[in-house]
Structures are given as structure tokens and as C-alpha cells.
Length: 134
Length: 102
Image (tube, rainbow over all chains, first blue to last red; front, side, top):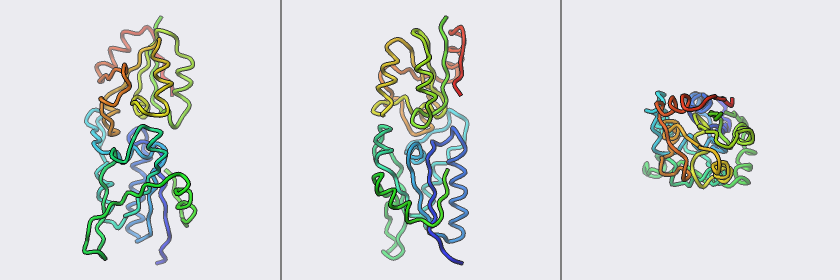
């Protein structure tokens, strides 16, 4: 089957709406079809991958750990926009440690998070063949 | 007659919060819940607006919504009060009226 470059654009905070969780579901489906997948976290989407999420107070399932498993599905490109973090008083230190294992480099763990500015994000978006927005 | 304004939209995504701040009166209370909770922390592009509103209004955030999004109470803007669901109920009792900004 032909492989295409897929990008999932995540722009919403988790839990308040169902978009973040739905995006994650579709990402896993696309991964099952061996597609070339990138995730973009812009605007409020950056809250999806903050560390230390604790949902006990709202009675919803905490699905943030699922992002940590994406490396096992060969998803290793998580583009995070610097401006989106800064506007929200966040830094890269506020994000989860998301990694993948590089089988061509003795299975070394490498970070999946790629910090880019808005202009660089636009360039990555322009390279895609299929874009799904959540 | 003090009013409790309940906002559930992120101030970075929708104009709901701006509209609320523009229509709330001195002495009113504003409660940030769900996605609105992200606007309660300091260092954001929204913080100055909220601080200005706090000159004559009280601001609260539902703490469960804050921590669900990976934000801790120590990052709140000074003066924003964290409340749990029981505190939410108290606010609805203490205020004569309630307006939910959807």
C-alpha cells in the first residue's frame, strides 16, 4: 500500500471537548496502516501533552499516557510550536518526555518532540499530503 | 446584586472570556471551569486582562480542571482562588444570580 505523509493538527485542550481523544484514536488507526505520521501541537493543543495531568478531580479518564506509547507505533514526529507554548506561559519543560526507539541506532531512545517556530511549522504543514485537523 | 459568571471556554481560543469580562460588573465573581481553567495561570498573554478585572471582581478556578491539564495551583495568578466542586456550590449559593457564558 502506498505510504502518504499524514499530519494530525491538534489545536484543542484535552477533556473540555472530545477532539484530543478523537485525534488520538485516528492517529492509531493511521499508524496501523503504516503511514508516515506527524503530529502538530499548536494553539491550545499544547495542553494535550503537558506532564503531570491528574484527572481525578473531574472524573474523566486521563489519556495523556497514550501519547507516550505512540513511539511504539513508529510515530516519532511530534511538532510543538514555540509561540503556542510562550503565549500560554508554558516552556518545553512543562511537556511530557515523549520518546521513540531508533532501531537503526541500537534502539537508542530519542525524543519525539520537535520544537519549531510558527514559520517552521508552516513549512512542515506544506510538505504533507493528508492533513487532519482536530 | 452580585452575579456569578461561569466561563468554560479557553480565552486563547474563543472570545467568550473577553465578552464576560466586558459585561461583568464590579463586585461580581467569575469562575473558570473546564477549558477556561488554562487562563488562570500567570505568564500568559491573557494574564494582564484577568489581573485588570480582578481590581473590582473576584476570580475563581475549578482546581480539578486545572490539574487535569497539567497545571498546578502554584502557577495561578496571585489572587485567583482555587475551588473544588463544594466551593463551586458555595459560589452559586453566595451569589444572587448566575450567568453561564457558553
